[in-house]
Length: 361
Image (cartoon, rainbow, N blue to C red; front, top):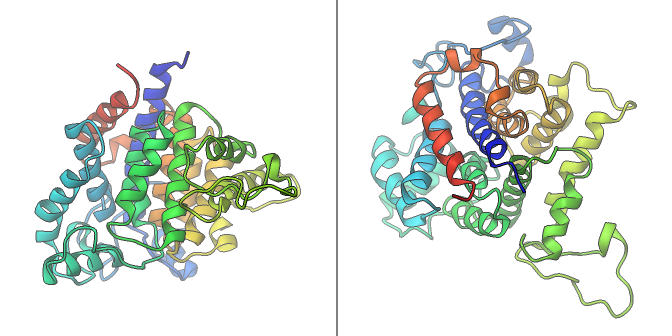
């Protein structure tokens, strides 16, 4: 019998971990020159910071959320109010609460910056008057994960519903199949952590077992334990929406690297250099998986190493924060991260309400 109190603690920790990671990245966001990052913020960023004048998010203050946090909160409220994922309700909120604040340019809107995929959706929806469903673009970034992580928490115990809802929401802004599959895979990993599993080298076996039962919509290319197909086997053994299960396999390799004594990344923030500083989803996920595996019981170290890696460190911190928070639980997040977070009580209330919906009544 699952311990629903622990599941709720981990679910709330996952949501708050994402909000905290977003706010931590606000000040030192998008420094690709690490020497300049260290000049502006010192050699170790230890908490919330103001953005520097003339840089991203200029005008905001330490502890505030970026637009990613704004949209995540919108998603959480929609899930709470509707008690499930309701695409029409979420799209209505985008139309009424976000899009009126945008003008199609980058330096505009909540957080004083709007990402490419959201700008594309705004143009198609507002300027071209296209219906939802025809608004997706080809950005290879993580914006969908940044909001659908709440769906993963809501349906942590229902992986089939989770995968369907995340895929449905992702294509509102991003239609590339690889991006969609990696976004669904991240949600599946997060769901496993909320259930109480570790992000370790065995996580992919758990995910592939869900592919075999049809709960996760990925092709099964090989037999159990990645054994080769045999004569007479169907092609592929299991047909799914996504052509490859590799997005489900990679987290175990990142976790194995984190615990292999012959593989050392020191200090750990340099994982951003190993996997890449840019924004693309294939740079961001490996680093987040690595940090969340290595610091599975140390939320502070996980998110601070994510932030100190430079580049697209805000997203790295959001993704690492939600994975780490799902492992430590809300109770394992140091109090100081709540003390400096703007509207922390309101955000905590949202996280707890959504966590309560993730378990049976």
